[in-house]
Image (cartoon, rainbow over all chains, first blue to last red; front, side, top):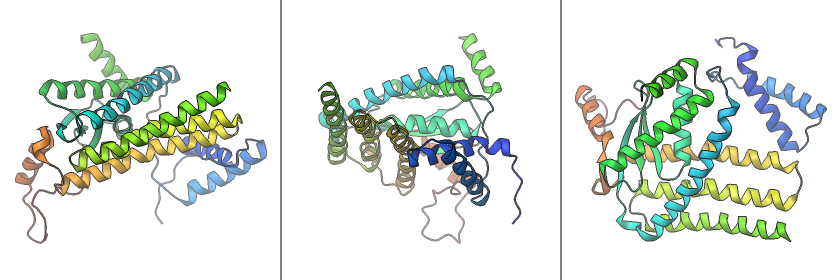
Length: 182
Length: 134
């Protein structure tokens, strides 16, 4: 098999994650379990070969906490909203397919943004255009162009948060410049 | 006593989210709207149920397992929603009369014009793109 050798540093986040999963499943975080988990993780990573996920090399925990807070808040409000729509509007619902152009061209960040907005009820990623970083979303209860504009603003705000948490330095600089212009 | 109250509130909250999904499935008009009801409320519902378990058990070693359950739900639920939604849109299982706006339609139409469907493909609608190979 012809495979590119991946340096251990690139694999490290994956190995650490697998060790944590191993510990969690055994409900035991003693050194012996973790060591054995590390051996298994190393074997798994090399045996079940996957192309490495290209992280951006930045991770800011200080921005992660408010991002998670915002995410949970949106999750609760949107869940209640979908519940309310199901009960009151039901079959008379009007939806829209909205195109949202993202700033970042990193696959990792586009995926993360798509995930975050899909998890919040009311929006669903139908299609992704990688070449232009455009997400096509199906959104519940969009009755006018203003509603669609609100969806776009909201998604781009989510992306901005993710760039602050783990975007590349270039994306972050672009975001700062955009905010300064406003 | 306090624990029991918290646990029952969390469990009822989680169950209500399942109810929301059920009502949504019955009442929403087309496939894509139903996908919202079928996949989304569980993210919060499962979180509430897992929190109830954590409070009830008072054993910190259980917490990582519960976190893991939720993380895998977070990772898989958008993917399945996307796959069904994408397939539904491509096979035109949606009611266009319910859409106030469709910005994907123009893009698909333009792509179909610049890449006419190959004659060897049978059963095609002439509107598919390259299946994500680009």
